[in-house]
Image (cartoon, rainbow over all chains, first blue to last red; front, side):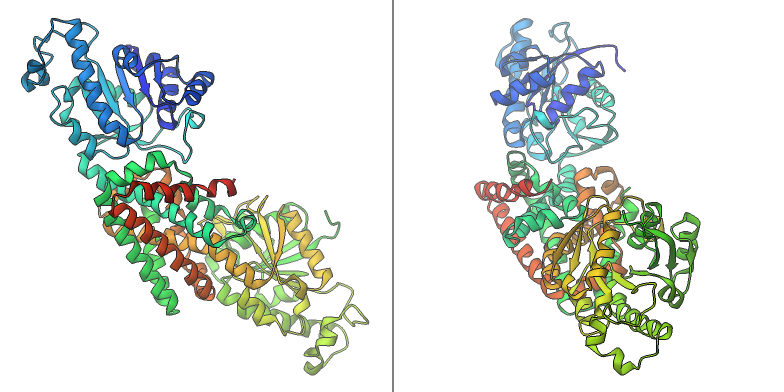
Length: 318
Length: 318
């Protein structure tokens, strides 16, 4: 592990932000964890649980943290990350000789701060996001002069619960973390964030933002939609809630588990990943129709063929 | 627990039959467990693992067991249970004064064996099934003169794995067991089978066979179909299997888990519960379409409303 200990600021003390705060501090990567949380109840809970050392304002966090982790819903993050980069620029300017906003927008300067940079000794601040869709946030920052100080990541871990109460140690252990459009980040920033995720025991994977959004539509977003639809179906038809409770075996519980997921998180994901999600949903609805026709026709051979085909997922999943 | 120890015969040494064999013996309900298994490899495995004391022929099992557990796919069980009741009748006749097949079909005699019955001291044999659909098997036995010696049950437990290798102790602990059309069984048989499931730590629920099939279409069968369709979708579109493996987070794994389920078990369930399953699938496809339209229209309010509605499943599931 790196010997340097960082001041880490976490914006959004929910499941992901809270769990990162917890392990980065426990495992010695963070010297101090500053938290930002709009909801006062969640903020108090985060302090009480001990997820963060202090709850501070957004401005303070961005001013003081070496690494800012943006762990808010993706609709908000898309606006927040460019704002944080703007503040980094202003802060750097304030600490060193002032430079005009014209020079701020000079990509040569921005892309090569190491060479003759006037930045102070503390090193460049870094901002990362941990959102589930990557294309919009990468597009929104693409031409920012400080783009290199942003690392776009997606730690593929979570549960169906949300809020600081849902945070847990070890949440990320052994899971994959995607670095999207890593070539747009400074090597030094990538190295530091690589260490951060190594401390969380995550396996790094590199892909471009649009690949990421396509793959996650298949292996994550569609699962949530099918769970939501399953919950809606059962809730509509099974008026007698007691029966659901009594009869729900492990199979139903695991299939419908994701339907507990938070709307604040999932509305912007589904809206942002619109094209990919619709494409997957259309294929999925076709498969359901195919199944429906086979069952309607009592075509046992066809049902068997579809199930045997689906069973191939065994070879891929652990 | 009952002081009586029974000879239990288990036909079909898969996940359910094997797990029952294991706990009924370990927990002292069964003195001896006889197993019947067509597949010689599975039969040998069941002996090696120690699920049963002996593997015997179907005929021997039905002749010797006090309680016969039919744990085969429901398409087979529908034919097997009436055959076992026929054999019970012939055996009872063989041990007591012979009675003609005319008297065998005499429902008065069959329905009231306690009064002046010529059955031997060992007590009436009982057959139970453990299948996931109940209406056809209850219909197939409805007018059998020995119907009262049959108890139709559905222990609501399982995993996505199959075969004797999948059997596990404690599989049934704390889950619900449905008794379907219990009024058709003799009170003494119900009492004995009630004890059997009490030993397995199951909560008994009583409902008629058609209610059972409707409810399980909602809380079990549809979950399997949605998982199969999800696996088919992802397998078709995600050509790069490595990506599925790398990216699949806990959410995808749990949603697609049931897609590993065995075709031998699920083809007859879906075919037998045809009407209910189609009705649920139609509602489900409508819900998917509703979601699709909301996403296609970027209608964030509608998406939020659908997710909030789906979230109500939280109140019902533990």
